[in-house]
Length: 308
Image 1: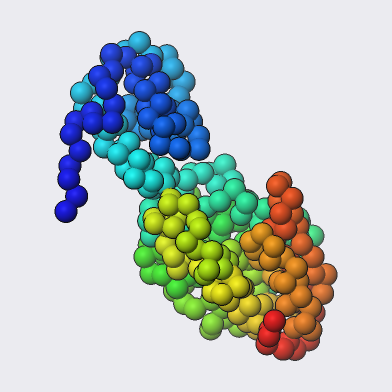
Image 2: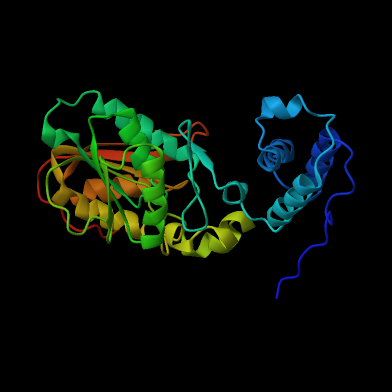
């Protein structure tokens, strides 16, 4: 049974918003949080209901008792290493805010590269109905599918996930961003049941090798859904299956875009080339120089199941 923390157990008395901010930052620093100043500001914004600009204009104001109590509650959660995004119920992706909780993986900045690569490909497509259909596999919070829908209003998107709970979060985000008429949420196993007619398949699938799971940070290992992280012995279990399934869903010359982990782009390129139905296979690196997105065009020929 969890004990309830004493009021202000983590923070000493605070006589102003400024000292509250400084002391919160100090507590987070001592706990080894990576961006203590940034997180302290976000926590204070959350408990005061103020933007950062308004908060900075009120630094000498004495915090209310209710604000201090709420800050203590949220800070205790963060000190247990619960991700800040779950505490705030919000994660930013491609300039938009998405609701997130422990039912879904927190959207990562690296995944924005999928959006950028898709945009480059989509700008060259002719505007016929067949080429406006896209599938987002493993949609989670819906951040990727919804971003594509917002950036390209012509698209019709199928967004799939095996988790019914994840799709509940995605549904709330579809409403939030006004795209529920163009993003159809489907519970299912990857691309099972989809037939030819799609211009692109985009996927950010689990790619953490099972043996490396224990090395992840507590924020990820303890709180984020393992189903969305664990990619099997080599991290490519689901990626391999999507490479095999995608030809059945794509039109000839349709594209497959996959986010992969560090060191996986070479093996994934090999899988696609060995399948015999992919052309223009290449890897795009993220800002850190990591091969992050592997993409290829469906040639229309039959593929062989991946065996690497």
